[in-house]
Length: 235
Image (tube, rainbow, N blue to C red; front, top):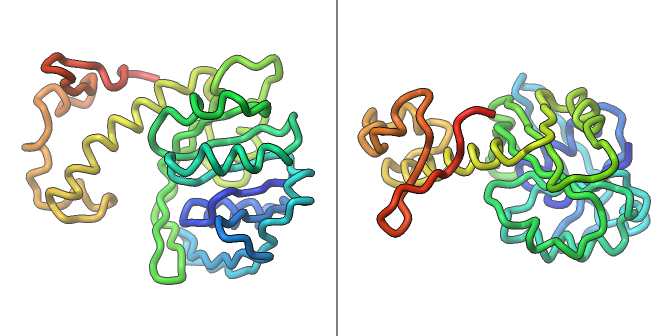
């Protein structure tokens, strides 16, 4: 498979590494065009991947089977629209980011849009990316398409497990959003890194609404003084 990865930060380099190591043709796409993308990753097992990969090659993009996007949500719309002009119309665009609403900004894009939520954890330490923890990437279509793209999940499962396909991806996206709505304020309040928030300060539960403390609780917030469901329980 030929893949262009748009966004070469921590998560982008994690996918570039995994795809390259499993024999796929890959290139990175940088905001400031460069012919090569330096990838320096320490994997969760301690192994090191340090390579200079092709970047910003329009001919490579024009023959890519997949555009994998790992940008921040607010960066997605403009960047994807620019690349979609050269990407084959049949090649899916996989959006892996926190937040929602980007699909509404990409209505003019003709390629199939796939959405993803991941618990793979990576962080930058100077010039090195650390794969902090393995996780699961949930993938599904942004809307109904005549073609079945579930085989992509099988391909990516072999690259960077675990990967799960959902015909309805919305519950997974809402769930991740709800988790971030809790974690992000806690990391600021307790001045700790996200991956340590469960152990930081020891009083995290004091900040949570009572309905959010149970394992099976429906996560919600209040909008205009009324309770609003952030995500339904279950998958």
